[in-house]
Image (cartoon, rainbow, N blue to C red; front, side, top):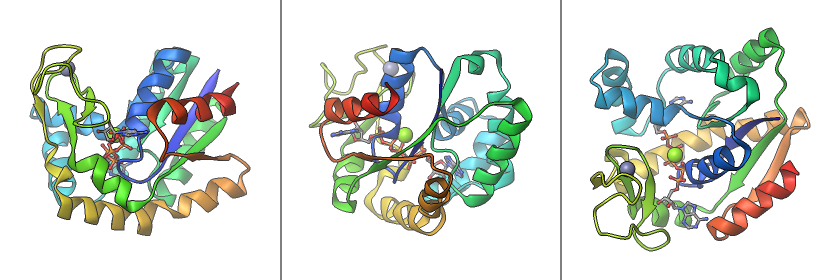
Amino acid sequence: MHNLILLGPPGAGKGTQAERISEIYGIPHLSTGDIFRDNLKRGTELGLKAKEYMDRGELVPDEVVIGIVRSRLAEPDCEKGFVLDGFPRTVAQADALKGMLAEMGKPIHHVLNIQVPDETVVERLTARRTCRSCGAVYHLRFNPPREEGKCDACGGELYVRDDDREETVRTRLEEYRAKTQPLIEYYRAEGLLRDIEGGASMEEVLSSIRKVLE
Ligand code: AP5
Ligand code: MG
Ligand code: ZN
């Protein structure tokens, strides 16, 4: 059983690796960013509220995010384990997570800290394409779809996320440094942090992660 957290700047490859981990180990992939984008697509109140922050590259307020994760972790599929992608992102979220997992009697096994330099972040995000229907993620150079503009998995339309424009990426990096980076020391102090070199190829990053898990 694996209860995992993926930590890392925007574009580090959290979503990409979480998908692979989810398939290999049969555990659900919980991405707060995907939950917000899915809500926005369906036009829910939550989606519209989150959009204000996401479009500026800022974090959505803690109380909004924490409630969502609490109810998601209580669903039966999380009994087998889970891989959290993009949560926690602040010390308040990490404290809340600690509390809710303690209530549920679940430990955190590893916090995988995927490290990549800023130039790599910009290169990866400006050429990322996301499927509007199923959320699958591509990269024009490193992981291109078979047919331009079309999702391999479902045939859906590929689009550029609103927050992948370069100036918004800069704000997201600032938010990461100010609010999320402190979690590295937070989890190191708990003995849970595992550093992963994220600048390598997708396969190499996956194999470093598997080494930690096996
Ligand atoms: P979220 O959707 O979580 O975005 P993020 O953390 O900025 O991360 P990304 O999804 O941009 O990057 P990733 O690490 O998943 O990289 P990916 O695998 O796609 O959050 C969006 C927004 O929602 C936030 O800004 C905030 O507003 C809000 N939000 C979400 N969670 C929140 C929370 N907990 N609290 C408050 N607000 C929250 O890879 C990137 C690209 O690189 C892809 O094209 C991929 O194909 C390519 N790639 C991946 N790995 C490699 C590799 N090894 N080599 C080459 N290319 C690669
Ligand atoms: Mg992602
Ligand atoms: Zn698709």
